[in-house]
Image (cartoon, rainbow, N blue to C red; front, side):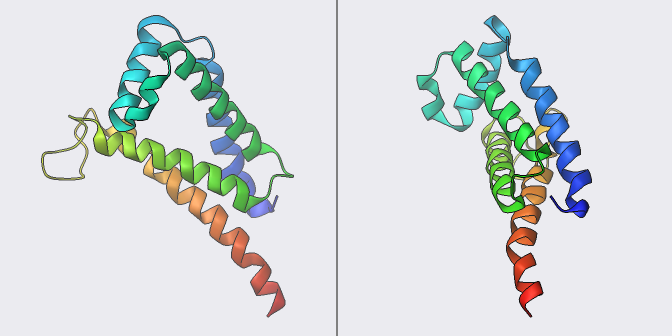
Length: 140
């Protein structure tokens, strides 16, 4: 891991680890609510039971968080994971009714929490692009 990546990877990784660990035991109404929002954005997720979906999401967040803080996981690889996860959250924001102002991508008050997740896509793409172009600069 490059020293310059350390603040980005550790801060986001710790956030994901914490989020995933908190979701490990979600059941009942909390799991149903989370699952319902996800199905709005990605209807195929309806094939999972809410508690199962919550567990899969929790494990995904823990895995991504661990990969971010692990110094041996290459930046482009962890960046792809972060970009994909962030893109899923942006899709959730864009497809869930009531999170955006009518006819706009600007968030409503209810959507501000998800709209901010666009930074995950930016951070992920930064890791991917910097990791892929870093070797080219050395060869020049």
